Image (cartoon, rainbow, N blue to C red; front, side, top):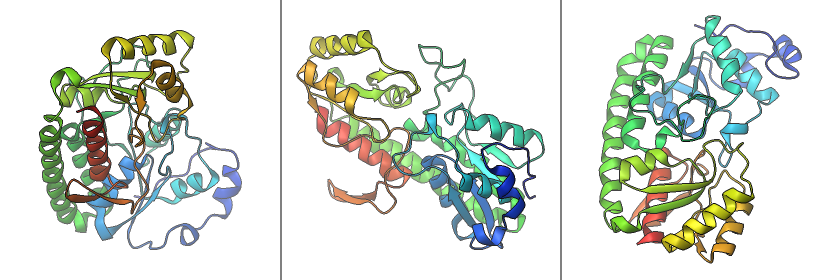
Length: 314
């Protein structure tokens, strides 16, 4: 079912909806035309959809989804898409409000986190607009729960390919569980007393729960939470008291704050950024510890983060 057009959700939408044609936006109308938000969701839909789906990802590598502002091209793509997938749990901030309204009006819009139970989600210490921590991809075993949502959404649009989407989903499920096992084996190389992860913002609570880490972020769960002087001083004190070897910047967060903390605390700042709210550039293949992986994929993103943390702390 094609998504219905709704009222203006971004400046300039009226002009776009009057002149847009699917041909100018999509390369192949015969495929399921899907719009996605974060890079993690984009990768998920591409993996499960394969060559039966054309995906336009709104957010690119290094983009912070918490504060993302839609562009005119985003609006055009959404207004002509067959289906839209987003992360949910208000990772996308006010963008989610527009997507929820579209869903209410009959559009095919899916939050990939919708099958996660309240017990599986983490409520941050700070009040994050009364929503659970949205950084669920930190645990591959939890991210597995997004697969069925994508299979459901794509199968509705292309029932003839439903079996293929299901098979791809099952294969990917196996890969993610293997990733979790690989990650736990690597983390085991870090003594438990050294498993303390300090980063730019609180995006690693699910990572911490999955791998028995203590985590501290300079900023809160949302990067829109600005750190103050007390936040900086408290983090510096924590680093000194715990005698940490290294702290970590993030690819989607300005490094200035964490650099200041590192300098004042007298601790090393990792030369490698962690991927928190966005993956790397597609095709950014690295070889490390006898294997290669693409940091522009979810699996590659996770392997990069695990290797960076383990190599930095052990």
